[in-house]
Length: 207
Image (cartoon, rainbow, N blue to C red):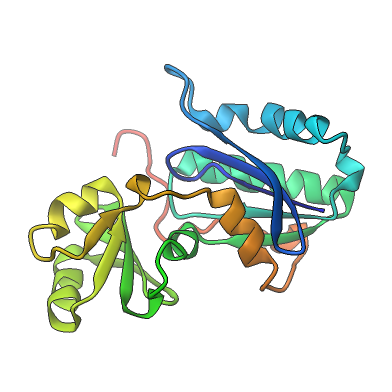
C-alpha cells in the first residue's frame, strides 16, 4: 500500500492507494493561526485507523518535495524520511510543479508558475526549468503562446498578458490522488535519496 501526502502548497493532502488507484484521501485546511502541516501525522494515523490499517501495511511513501512553503516542504520530507527509515519503505519524491502540471491534459504547451519572490517565478514545462526572472517568462509566454497554471501572485502578473491562465487553487484537484498516480509511473528510491527541492535557498530571518 502506498501512503501519499503533500503539505507544500495551499492545504495538506493525504491519501492511501494501491497500483496507482486511490483507496481514500483527506484534505486539511489551515485552522486559525495553525498551519495545516501541523496536522499531518495525526491525520495519517486517523486515515489508516479508518480502514483498519497499521503502519506495517504501508510499503511505500510518496511526497511533494517542493518548491512551495519551506515549512511545508520540511514537514513532508522529514515525515517521509523518518517513516521510510523506520519501516523500511520505498520512497517517491515528486515536485509540486509536476503535480500541478497534471491539472491540464495539454502539458506540452502549459507552463506551471509559482511565485519564487525576488521578481522570479518557478517554472515547469514538461520538466523543471528552475527559478527564472518574471520578465524572461513573460517573453516566453508571448512568443510561444503558452497557457498557464499558477498561484495567485503569478496570476496577478501574467493575466495582464494572456487570457489562457488559471489559478491552481481554483481547479478541482486532490494532490494526494495525483501523487498516487504519478508514483506508479516512477522508479522508487530509499529514504537516503529523498531530499527537499530547494530551487532557491530558504529565506533567512530578517533578510
